[in-house]
Amino acid sequence: MHMLFGRRRRLQALNEREAAGEDLWTDKLDERARFRILYLVHKVVDGTDSRRYNLVAEARRLVLEDLGLPFLYAEGARQQDVEHCILEGEEETVFSYLEALVRLGSIVASQYFGNVPTDDTDRYRSRIPDFIEAINVVLEEHRCSYELVEGTFVPMESRTLHRSVVVPALRLLGGRSDFEASERSFRKAIEELQGGDPQDAITDASTALQEALGALGCQGNTVSRRLKDAIAKGYLTPYDSKLAEWLEADRSLKGDAHNADDADRTDAWLVVHIVGALVLRVASGPPRR
Image (cartoon, rainbow, N blue to C red):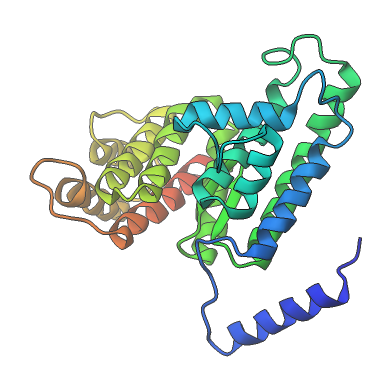
């Protein structure tokens, strides 16, 4: 369906404000974004047999168990609790619920609902990619600084760096089994940033690079030694050793070591972005030497 007049005019006004230099991005969901998300949730589960396997309720249960909550927003019927959460609840709970719905797309057939008809299973799974894309459209149009990537919400500190470094790195690492340990550490670094722990984020990002280099066959028990081995093997150039020195120093001085200085979000994002760019370069491009 083509965009209607009101939505076109609203986006035009946003673009004009941004062209004038105004920063409109926020980590909050406005009221219209919440209603649009609610309609998308209704759409993705439409046509499934809620009497036999209630996807809305099952996703709710996953979130309650994960977050240790008695209800998402307020005590009452499960469907109403979900709707009230999406429309009025905290963003972290809303995003957790959307992640749970996406996760159910890969496990709905057996783990949770037993003998689910294949047609219903296929229908729901086939809707998940469009659901993710539609959620990201809503977030972008309402200038909410998160993106749903591979079923996980990722914050955007900088849109340019997010699109060119963070998202490609996550997709590259997530698509290769040999980089599983690196992906786990890279995602953890981003989660630590979301949780307000930049020191841990710096350490985890450095570990992600160390694991990625290990997957390429580089030896050493520190990230700097593996970077030096990557230079010896031709993945990097000799002058790239400066990156190894900088990353090791930042990890020691601003990571989660006992004698580390306090780091802020900007310090951690610098490390995450550089690590992401390095991982992309060594794992997907030709050798630099």
